[in-house]
Length: 318
Image 1 (cartoon, rainbow, N blue to C red):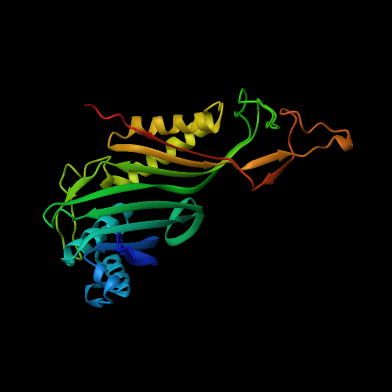
Image 2 (tube, helix red, strand yellow; image 1 turned 45 degrees about the horizontal axis):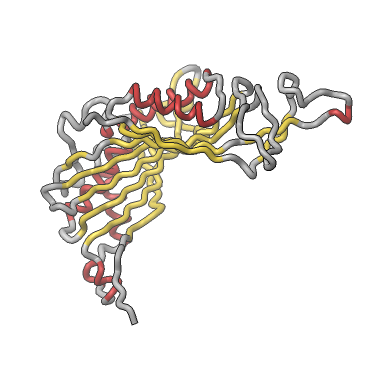
């Protein structure tokens, strides 16, 4: 019988739901997160020898997440909160060498009353989510900790009723799709930005965490709320004005602008599923609804659908 070994192990808590109110007198700010916190380290014996003495219970992982949600000064910034949480795990526990933190932020927007933002009332602003993924790596020692951050958005549903074509693609015996010079273009945008890894300092404080001035400068991962908002604006504006030859071509233009506007972003990845709208054939009623310029009534079709994805990277100088 061939020998076997444990080659990978990771565990933690997923779907930790966090809602936090930050109270500044009568002015309240809210965030809602779904947090996943996973750990790696010297935990093999919990699998191979049934030794639980190396396990930080997943319930404790959950409790630490809630503790920092109350005490961390960075709760309103998902990148900062994830860095604080991930660094705490590898700093607190000598045998834990890597943490993987994912934060999904739901959208709450203030209600306007007579043109003014209400101090304590909010509405759910669609299905779009903010996403953050942080890996804190102490495998080289607790004095040589590095962090990797990616951030972005998901489920941003967009549509344009013209300004999109799809022509000159390969035609052979398998092709039934007609070429079209004017069509609806709709997709649900998933966008991920990545930053270069950077050093963080060992930190077991539950109420404090900071980076150097250089690493917390404008446009860095520390400034994630502003960076992602800027990338979101670029995505929407390019999508709206580009005379799209294809989803692929528009995707590239969106990523190109994001990299041009954000020097600290190293890669931009998009996943863009087609949301198809098929014109209804009304020839039975003597009405032209198939010519692109005359098409006004459509059937939304959820499946099957095209799926276009790509990663565009900054070329690093040698």
